[in-house]
Image (tube, rainbow, N blue to C red; front, top):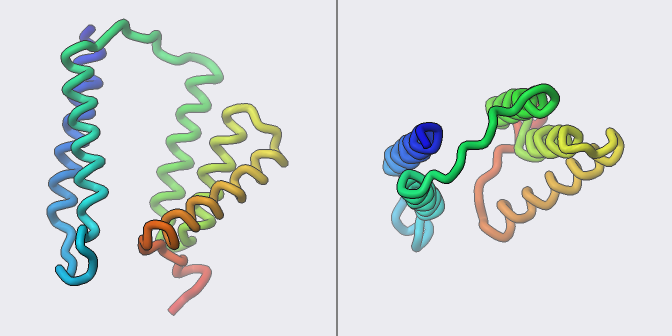
Length: 146
């Protein structure tokens, strides 16, 4: 149960950090009725609700991953961190491709299949965020300088 409480505290901390970070977003009031803060605030609220719920009923603790599962988790976290860190430089689509292809491969897809899944996912997420949600996505300063 202690591990559940620790996970709950981490979720609540992330919710608080996200809410504080979201409050720092500046935008013109006339830009959008909801503004760019709506989604991050909803995400922070969802994290907080999950954290509180998990604190109240943590359930049984799962064993810590070992072997290939632990290796895959560490690689996925490292690749995701690197891709997100480089997103402003390489652009959204290449970063999403790297993350999705790597995740597909680590979850058991063959290398060529993982590349196809990564490409399809990158295009899907780009279309969703850019056109359906109207979100700004970085094009990449290394690919499209100036």
